[in-house]
Image 1 (cartoon, each protein chain N blue to C red):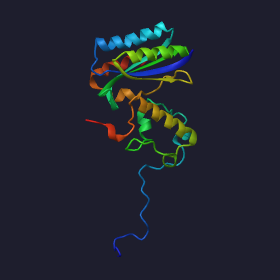
Image 2 (image 1 turned 90 degrees about the horizontal axis):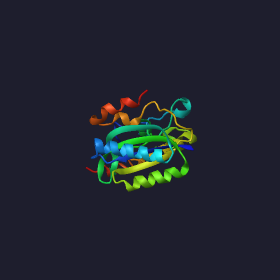
Image 3 (image 1 turned 60 degrees about the vertical axis):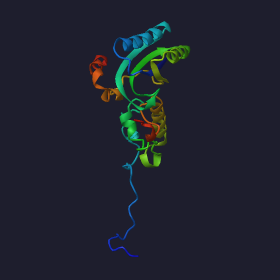
Image 4 (image 1 turned 180 degrees about the vertical axis):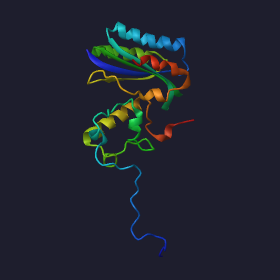
Length: 122
Length: 89
């Protein structure tokens, strides 16, 4: 088991239940792959640095988890299939998971997501 | 051909980035380089989105390498631009 971090961008026009369903879906996929989820952080909708799939904005979700190496391939395969995930990136956390003090995404997140930021702070 | 207002010494070299002595990450061990913290990384990219070279940023080789990797990761996930040109309307 190694610690990984996957960040993915959900289509910005997907809000509410549809968006929550996506987040829950990938949490469920990680659970099926016997991954140990450390943190799921929803950054909210923010502007992209460049257009992706013709979208100027996107909803960022960050997942940190411990999983086997072959679980990553399956997770990414499922993300490629899902059309609502417009971009994703998985990074190996070499030093394990560390609670970072300030998430960059929180500051520039848009107005409709403001109440979601507080629930992750312990 | 003489300009009366011209100062005697040649013009100072252009300083587009504030030059700081030494590596700021070596000086402050608590600073972490993370591709998600774009506020830190913004300091190390030019207006066109290029990575600022080590001779200007003042980073040590080790930290410049980490900065470079972090910027490239941030670009990949659309947190930072590859270039200023693709901000279409």
